[in-house]
Image (tube, rainbow, N blue to C red; front, side, top):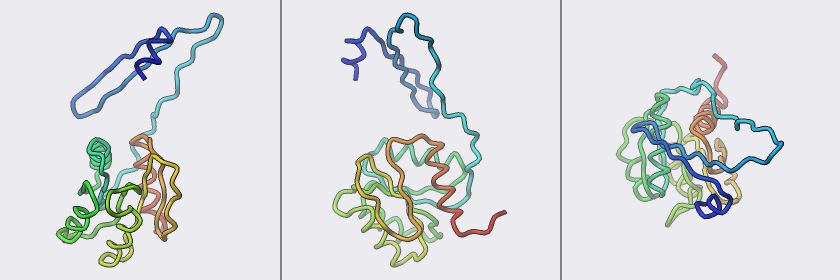
Length: 171
């Protein structure tokens, strides 16, 4: 990425704040006569709040931590695992109900869909949000949905809220 930006006479700006995340801004020289418009930003209010319990299973440490923080900031109780074996142990040791699992499809050892089916044997009704950065076919399981990576915190939170609210009476 850096090489492409430099070859185009552009530059990269980095802004990072503890607890808030990091923003990379990429700037390219303008084209004479073209107007400049700012790209739309994700400015949705955080209305996708909840109190449900969510298990996040993602083998990429950074992505897992980002999902954990994004959901915890919205009030969810979040437990996390780096791989299917850890997720099974977390589920067995977690005495509280688990309302939803957010799982990468391409996990090591066991696929995300196989993990969900395994966990549902002990937790019937567990809803599942599958995520993937590849063009894999989304698992065709009941009470599940698919979200393609990359996604914003707001998109993740909205997908979680929609899936948790499926089949529930409107408030």
